Length: 443
Length: 97
Image (cartoon, rainbow over all chains, first blue to last red; front, side):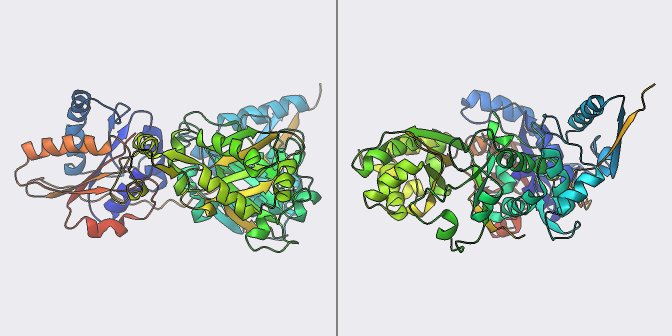
């Protein structure tokens, strides 16, 4: 909730503030004000929503909030040694002891205890004992106390040791550690926009995309069912990233992860590019990395979509079904110009397009030119979320009857990789508020 | 009787440095003051603030306003926007949706 952050900034400049917070969002306002060290930040709570109200409804809500808003800027406020969140006491402990009469009982107690503390994704956990964490730390040459990044929403310090603890809990092997460290750097890269993509009502699912030789060494699935189950590396790396976001970032649904619907990809989402089956340079190579380099690209996914085609003899036989499906991704399609789209072509479709003489650049251009909306639809979808401003892209496009506008502002916002196997299906990940962030994996 | 099985696990939580900071001094009166009405560009926020603006105009002699619509996907610090908020004494900030 960036408004609380902005109010904090203004308070620090000695400007008193009052925020308007809708019902359902008080927990994140509390969480943000505590994280910022200013629990006395104040807000008036207004019944959700504010959008789409009739004037009389708006009047009722404003009238109810008005006295509180005036008081907030005119009556002294103080942090007054406000109490910390209840579960913080346990957060201060270096270790937790558990006991039971059987292995199963102890493991059940572990999962139940950590779930109660909100230190879990809800699934059974591998116990992060000192011995297991030390073994995990063998997977990296970085010192345990090295801070890789600070993760939102609490700006928790992602030390190598904390990453290792969560990696153990997720079921990782020590040789996954370099991938996790690069992934954490990716999340904290400004373009990924963790401040929003980790907390938004939009239910983003951070996706780990691995390129280079390490994908084969770790047996990360890039072939059939790459988004699905069955591979330990895909499952455990993606799960570790979620546990890291929960435990190091301090994220929790309905407290400061406001995703309205959630997403199965929030449990785990890790794939590799099927470079062996690709007729083109990999994503990492396109970004300037050497063929021998291994990289992680963190993708702030919002929407995982699929398209199907048997292909044919012309590029549009493969690409038009993709474009039509991309255009169907709803209101957020009107915001594609803010972000990126990742297209995952299966090897058969990729080879067909290659045989038709298409390069990745030409595919990007095709998708850019063929994912268009009627201008009127574009405006309507955009207005459902934001107030249009004079500097909006929408105001730079033609309003002639029958005119259309591309979803993306440039072909460069479309990235193409190869994944999966023989069949008619392809996939895409639509983003919304963040961009992909790539880091080289260091041993 | 079987022996108890014990397990000691490490804490997975990341530490965060929280530096407490007191909020700004409040205004003794809003009379003649300049209030910033800030919205996050999401639907409904500006309309809501316009109603609040009307109440303040009705109740507070000499109150003035400046308005800022800050895109919700922009995370710049507020210092960057101060030139658009000249001489403000307080701010009311509404998020839309």
